[in-house]
Length: 278
Length: 276
Image 1 (cartoon, rainbow over the protein chains, first blue to last red):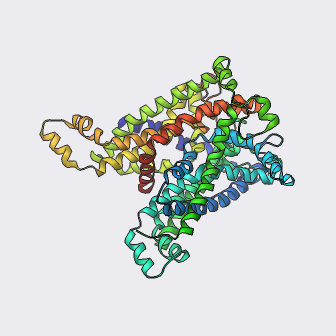
Image 2 (spheres, rainbow over the protein chains, first blue to last red):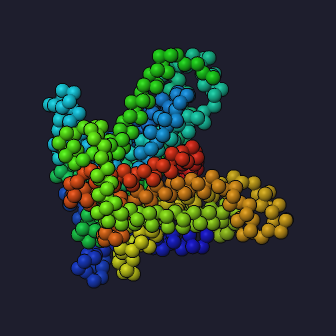
C-alpha cells in the first residue's frame, strides 16, 4: 500500500503540480538555467501560433470522425457477434486481437502496405483493374488523414466491441422474448429495446473513445509524423515536439494543460448526457 | 431461445467473416512477408510468398545483434513492470477493499483521475526529473512511468475482486490463528487468481507495446524497446523482410498470451471498465 502511494505521489502528484507551474512560466530546458514566471503569456502565444491552431483543429477533426466511427462500428460488430451463437470463437479472437498487438508496430506494417510503389494495397487495386484509384496514400494530406483514422480504428474497435458485447449480454433474455411477443423485430428491437438498455455502456464507451481520440499520438507519429504539411499533426504530437525537440518545457506544459482540460470537459459532458437520458 | 431466420444467420456469418478478415489480414501479411526474400517484397508484391525462405530470421539471429538487444530490452522492461505491478496492485487493492484508513476515498479517486489523465502532461516533468537524477536511458527510468500507466487499472481490478469476496472466509482464518498478512497470503490471494491473471495479461500487453514513454525517455540502443526501435529503423533500414520478421517476432508473444487467456481477459476488461 505505502509503496504504491509513494510511486503514485512521486510520479503523479508532483508532476501534475509541476506541470501546472510550468504552464505559467518560460523555461527552455536546453538554454535556461531557471524558469521565469510569465503569467498567462504561454496561453496568449498559443492562440497566435499556427502550429498549435492546426494541431487543435486536427485533433478536433480526428476526434469527431473517430468517435462516430468507433461507436457505430463497434456497436454493429457487437450486435453481429451477439447474434452469432455457434462457432464465434474464431471471430472473437480475430476481432479482439488488435487490442494486444503493439500499436507502433502495426503502424510500421500499415505504412509498408500503404506505400506508393510497392505497397500491397496499390498492387491489389491494380490487379482488380482499378489502377486509377491507386494513390500515394501517405503523402497526400487528405488521404493521410483517413489512413490515420482507419489504422487507429483498426486497433481500437475491438475494445469498444467487448464493452458493447458485455452490455448486450447483460440484457435479460425475458426482455427480448417479451419484446418479440409484442412484435418488436429488426430495427424496432434495436431502437426500442437494445439501445435504451445499454445506455450505461454507451457512457463508458463514449468516455473511453473520447479519451483515446484526444490522446491520439502513436499512429500519426509513426505513420506520418504529423506530415504532410501538418495535415495529421495532433495536439499530443505538437506537445511532444515542443517539449522534446525544442525543449520549450513551459510552452509545452501549457499546451498539455489545454489538452487535459479538453479531456475533462468532454468526459464530463459525456457523463452528463448519459445521465440526462437515463 | 430466440429463433433466427436462415438468411439472417447467413448474413451475420458472412459479415463477421469479412470483418474478421480485415482484422486478421494485416497480421497474416506481416507473417508472410517475413518469409519472403527482399526482391520478392519490392518487385513482385504478392500476398503469399512464392518461395518460403527463412533468410530474414537467419539475418536477425546471425547478424542482427541490435534486434536481439531491442528484444531483450522489451522483455526486461515488461517482466519487471508486470512483476512489480502484480505485487503492488494486490497489496493496494486489498488495502482499499479491506483496511479502513483515513483518506481512502481521496486516494482512490486520485487514482481514478489518473486513468483519464493524458500522459504527455506528466511526461514533461518526469523527463526533467529523470534528467536531474540521471534516470534517463536506464531500465528503471522506463519501468517506473510504465508502472504509473498500468497500476491504476490493476489496483481497480484487484480492489473489485477483494470487495466481492466474503469477509467470513478471512474471519474464520483469523479465528484459526492466522494474522492479517497470513490470511491475505494463504486465503485471499489464491482466491483472487483470476484477477491476478487479468492484471498480468493486460499489464503484459500494455507494457510490451508501450511507445510514448519509451520514445521520450530512451534514446540509446542499449535501452530502447523494440516498439520504438523498429519505428526508427523504418526510415533508416529499407530491408522490409527483416523488419517484418522482427515485427512478427514481437507480436507473437502478446497474441499467444491473449489467445490463452482470452475468455478471462475479456471478462475482466469489461468488469474493470464498467466499475471504473
